[in-house]
Length: 177
Image 1 (tube, one colour):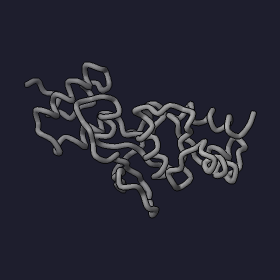
Image 2: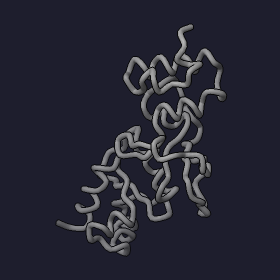
Image 3: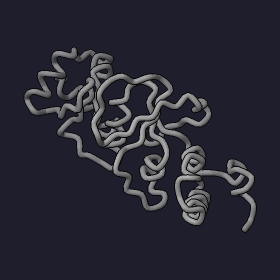
Image 4: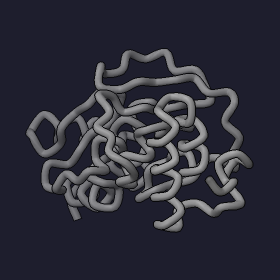
């Protein structure tokens, strides 16, 4: 199997995204990744993050790219998590990414990176292979950023889709209206 096919295998399982580190893990040297990008097989986003042009993009591709660009330990947060899962009607102008470590690299304008030291491991999970906060945590983070009636509709929708349990909600949200 050639390098292009090896990278396709990675990208097909990761929403079209390939990083230099993942390529090197399967034996594809970084220089070969750059050559394939130069030949048009990969689209470069910077910081060693690429998408494979032979893998169709999905609604998960852009969030996966954003998390990869932010680096190790990054995760989707706030409305980006809710939008990823189709909860509510969001069309965030930027992909919201959090990280528990400092990131000093230049990131594209369509990303919003926030340093989050307040994020415990139990509030993190993965959706479609993309690290993200749990739905419960995303709802908590959005609670005071939107009108209460809209937030309550989001909670109801998440409950109906079994994305959260009543026991996970803050006491004031779980009380019947």
